[in-house]
Structure formats: C-alpha cells, structure tokens
Length: 80
Image 1 (cartoon, helix red, strand yellow):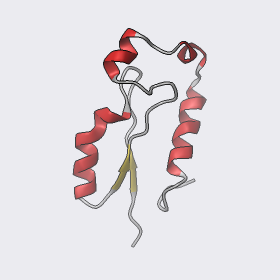
Image 2 (cartoon, rainbow, N blue to C red; image 1 turned 90 degrees about the vertical axis):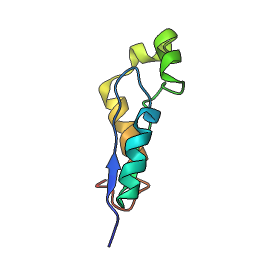
Image 3 (cartoon, rainbow, N blue to C red; image 1 turned 180 degrees about the horizontal axis):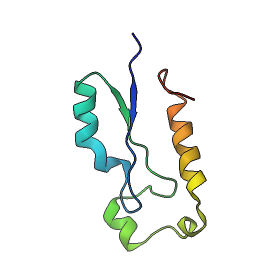
Image 4 (cartoon, one colour; image 1 turned 60 degrees about the horizontal axis):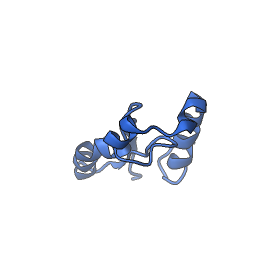
C-alpha cells in the first residue's frame, strides 16, 4: 500500500517549520508529511516579519503553487 502524502501550507509570515508538531503527529499515524516554505521564506518567521525579501513584492500566487508542485513531485503518492 502506498503512503499518502500530506502537504501542510503556511501563511505569508510563517515558514514550513511552523507545522513541525503536526508533521510529527501525521508521520506517527503513517502519513508522509511535508511543509515546504514559500519561495523567499528561508528565514525564521520573526526575521521574515522584520526584514522581508524584496522579491516577495513581485511574487505571485502561481509561484507558490509551482514551488509546492516541485516539492510534491518527489513523493510516490503525489497527484502530479
């Protein structure tokens, strides 16, 4: 049986790290779980709020979706 992959999606001033407790719980229940950070969100949440990358001003929703697609493509249960 193939494991199902859960994709956790964070908001603008967070990172994938914010989902870590839920990822741990889901993995304990047998789900593969990932929470990639958005493009240009490579810092801790407090740092993002204090000093956002200027590239965020040009980022569009499709960039976020494309980054999630790239993350999911590596998992056998991914729908892409």
